[in-house]
Image 1 (cartoon, one colour):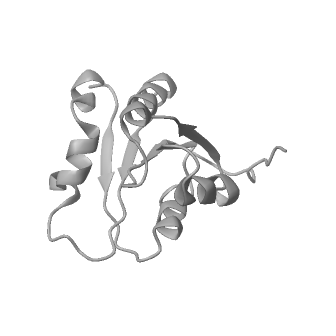
Image 2 (cartoon, helix red, strand yellow):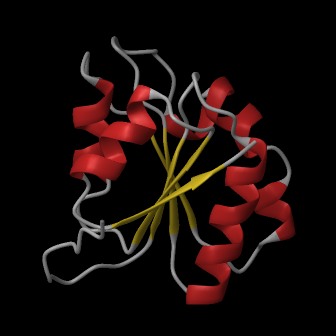
Length: 127
């Protein structure tokens, strides 16, 4: 079964940072895709209440991204930490205009929800 996203202007790659999914290989894949496409990369982690830190200083996001930003200096990296109790909804909203959404792991609920409901291409990268 192939589900084609509705046609609309799309730009950038969104990297989903989800605690339930592995991220190492997905981070590398997302940076590589953004570099190859010549577009920005937005790393997104959803929290259920404000963290009190700016997205650039978010420790979970920083740990997940590791040294990859230094390896891909040509990729403009944006960091987002939206607050929403429904993580899937937040990830879908953050990726609404992306060319590609990347998530690590396998068949978790967020990956499955993105595959079923995202209006764009989704890459689930095994850890």
